[in-house]
Image (cartoon, rainbow, N blue to C red):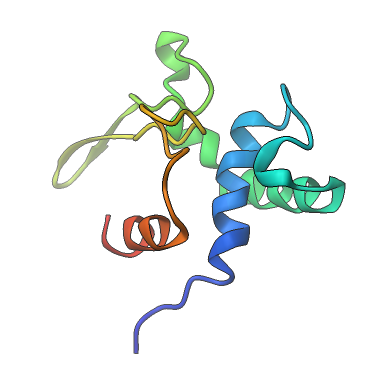
Amino acid sequence: MSARIPNAAWVRAAALAGAAALSVPGAVLGAGPQQLERGKYLFDAGGCANCHTDAKNKGPLLAGGRALKTPFGIFYGPNITPHPEFGIGRWSDADFIRAMREG
């Protein structure tokens, strides 16, 4: 039985809302206040900024680059900003689900 990602649109909105809600509230995916609040809650609960922000080197919020040492080698957190070229701004829900399930 494969793990189901609850409501992929909410999870994807959380990543995008976390990246943009502070600077452009309401503009994220045409989200309303309740959706942005829910996205921020999921973003905070998931600790997304911890792995996707290189705070040690003063990197931009969610722009990736943080080195995470694992037993399998070093993993670098990817950019999950809504930037259409360098982030996940052009990803579909299917793209996001695939990344969450398969890496």
